[in-house]
Image 1 (cartoon, helix red, strand yellow):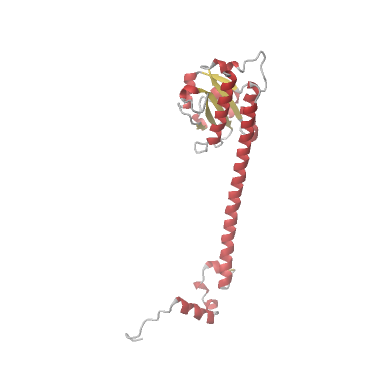
Image 2: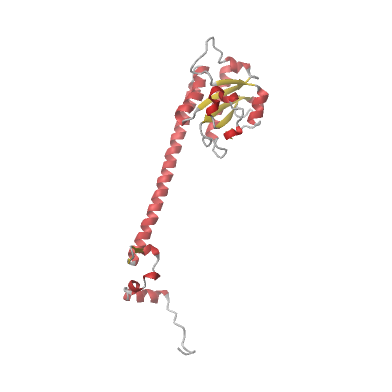
Length: 243
């Protein structure tokens, strides 16, 4: 080739037409083929390679779709369970039934080891709702009075749930009583006389304790727990201070 000879630079369309006329080319040059169109040491056709790639993408999309559908179904089950508890709270005819709906139902529906309620000693009318002549075995160790100042300290004077993991909760007995030794993580959800009442309306907390450190984590969404606590706080206030 002399200096005046132009370089050979075929266009993609020319290469395509040449390969169509010489399909045996890749039989001798399989190293030029992508891994997606080779199998068991044998060279497949370009069409087979494309089909294999599309099949793999389809399987990936199908797996993602299954994951999304399972997440949707799980969220539906969670919302349904919360709705069941909220209905029981609103329709509870007595303080006892209200306490059971707020504690026993979450344990049963969500596999929580222990659920309890603490009420501030600043609100004796609320505590009076649960005074009975004889101990109630079903509600025993599910309701605990707590000094109001201590309650504010532990809930960090915030309307948001306090999530504690591992050894962080050194004062768990205040919230969980005899069940404390098995609690490894908890969600302490403030209770208010009204969702908009602020710190002055703080009356206690709804406490959910798990047996594993990852049962409740700071990264968990807490919107549904706050909704549940708002309803419980309203129901308690109305029972203690009826119009």
